[in-house]
Image (tube, rainbow over all chains, first blue to last red; front, side, top):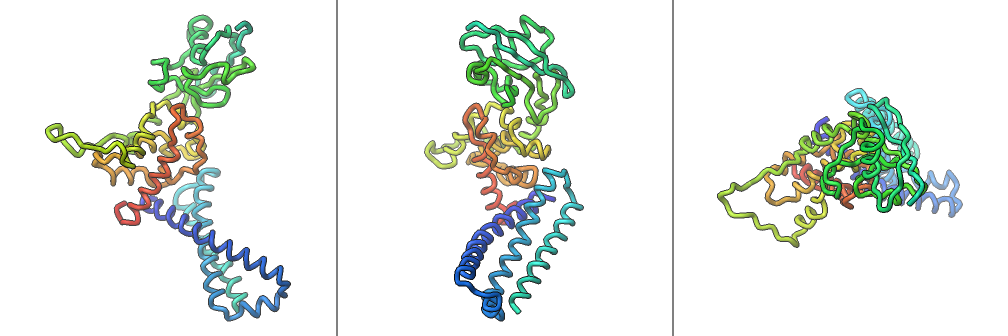
Length: 112
Length: 238
């Protein structure tokens, strides 16, 4: 990896962290609201089905996680397991795709 | 002062061992005084490094009771109230012998971080005027007093985990040059300090800042480098 590529990854991680900070707050507020209001699963799904704002928000959340987590793991794998180089980066691209796939599958399932 | 100090000193290379010594305790005794007493009176073959004895040269740093310190300015009563001292070479550097660490990679990394000033004027031109109260100059002032002792490098966990990491001292030096308005190698220097072996590897543990005997904050300089590199990358200058 070059200094430029490393710097871009660092920027992507900081930008996704900023996004996640907002997403987590909104997510927690939504969860607390849903639980305290005593909404049933059916009532929640009736609100999320076909709701494009909900879809946009949680898609952003999932994609930010898919960017943020693998970049953090990149350092963890290097520093704790000594795993560096192309094999690590290829594995992490796969892991990012898996996170995005599973996350978006859940989001689309709740969207309807 | 009475009572002897129980001192254990590292002998040999990486696979060496601690050797015990009894050293007379004295008033205002420094750890370097203890090591010097051992070499002059008890064990002439003990290898250690020092020069100025007054906290200027940066050559006497060792690991004292598990913590990297400049031994000439470290009083025994501050670090060994119970009279026990364990003195070893600096961590994160190869051991040559006894208390002498090989500083080559430490200083090679200063060069790799482009730690040399690159002038933009010749001797035939006027002196550059740098306002003492400018932000850049004040940030240089805050970081410039490094004596190259290696205490920060020895205390940094990231250096332990990532041997390619340039380390706090080299990055601190690069930061002073990035903030130097007279310097002509800003772009090359930012490229040299970016990435997984450079400023982006720092986890902001702040061990360097806590341990620096000159009370500098390499962590702040590294954060400044991250900002400078990010701006350069966003402008397409990296």
